[in-house]
Amino acid sequence: MEIIQKEIRLKSRGRGFHLITDEIKQACPELSKVEVGMAFLHLKHTSASITLNENADPDVRKDMEPIFNHLVPENQPWYVHTFEGPDDMPAHAKSSLIGVNLNLPITKGRFNLGTWQGIYLCEHRNHGGMRSLVITIIAN
Amino acid sequence: MEIIQKEIRLKSRGRGFHLITDEIKQACPELSKVEVGMAFLHLKHTSASITLNENADPDVRKDMEPIFNHLVPENQPWYVHTFEGPDDMPAHAKSSLIGVNLNLPITKGRFNLGTWQGIYLCEHRNHGGMRSLVITIIAN
Amino acid sequence: MEIIQKEIRLKSRGRGFHLITDEIKQACPELSKVEVGMAFLHLKHTSASITLNENADPDVRKDMEPIFNHLVPENQPWYVHTFEGPDDMPAHAKSSLIGVNLNLPITKGRFNLGTWQGIYLCEHRNHGGMRSLVITIIAN
Image (cartoon, rainbow over all chains, first blue to last red; front, side, top):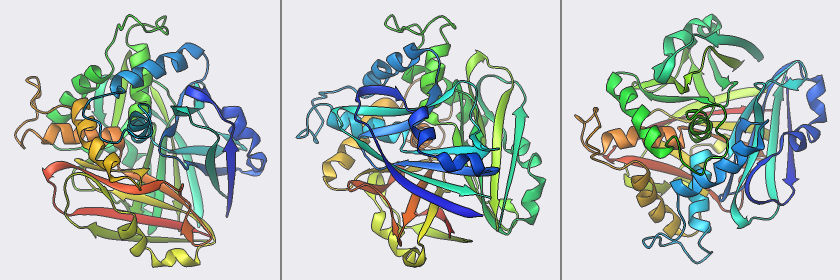
C-alpha cells in the first residue's frame, strides 16, 4: 500500500458551479495503476466548496447558484462580518453547507463514480481567484 | 494493511429519510476481523444522499423530509432544469447539501458510531429506484 | 503504513460555532512524525457537527449561528419530534447539513489546511455537554 499526495491549483473561475472532473483526472495520471483505493480531495479555502452532482445537463449547475443564494442571501442587516463585501459572509456559510472534502473510490484504475456524477468546484465569491486543492490517494 | 472494496445495491425506497444501518452492517462481514480502520461509503447518485442521524425516534426521520422541502422547495418559477419533474432539481440541491460520502471509523470489529447515530439513505426523488453504494474499508 | 486511532472528549461549549483547531492539534502529537497521510475526524453525535471555516475574524463564527437558525428555525408548528425541546429537531437537521466527518490531509508533520481554515465544533443544542470525537490517522 502507498500514499500519493499532491497539491494543485484550480484555474480561476467566476462565481457559480463549475464542472472540474477533467481537471482532476488530468492531475492524477497515477490513477491508471491503482487497482483499488481512495482519493481524498481537500479544498484549502473557506469561501468555496466542492461537491459531486449532475455532469450532463448544464442547467443543473445554473440552478444551483440561485438555490444557494436563496438559502444564504446577501445583505442581511444583521450580518456582522461585512468588511470583505456582501458576497463574503454568504460564501463562508455556503462553504460549510456544501463542504470542502470529497472522497472518490478508485476501482481498476478509475474514479468509481456514478454515471451522472461529476466533480463541481462551487465558487461562492464574485472574484475568488485560483483555488488550491490537495489530492491524497491511498492505494493498494 | 489492506483495502477491501465492494459495491452493493440498496433496495428501492420511497421519498424520505430511511435508516439503513443494518443493511450496511450485513454487507460488511469482514468488519469483525478489523481491529482498527476506516470505512468509506460512497453513494453513486446525484438525487439522493447519505448522512448520520438519530437512530431511535422515527419522528426525526419524518421531520427531516419537510425541513429539506422548505429549504429547497419544488416548482420555483426560476428553475431551468425542470424536464425530469418538479422533484428533480430540488433533489440535486439536497444531494449536495447533505452529501454522498460518509466515513465510519472502525474499532475492534465494529463501526465506532455514537449511541444515537444511524446511517440514513436520504431519497430525494419520488421514484428513485435502487441505489448503488461503494464501500471501501482500509484496515490494519 | 500504519493506522493510529484515538477517541477524545471535547470540552462542553455553549450553542454556537467554536474554533477547536488547537484542541485537535494537541490531541495528535503523533502528527509531527507523519511525512504524508490523512486524518479523519468523526463526531459521535446527531445534534452537533464539525466543519472547516474562517479562523481569523471571530465575527464569521458569530454570523454562522443566526444564518443556520434562519435555515432551520425552531418551533415550526409541523415539527413532530419536539419532546427534547425546541432546539432539538433543528439541531438534528443542522448536523446533517454540516456533517460530522472532516478529512484533514497531513503533509510534513502538519495538517495541510488553507491559511484561513480552522476546525469548528458547531454546537447546535442549548446545553450539549461534552462531545466525543474519534480521530483516525492513516500515515506512511
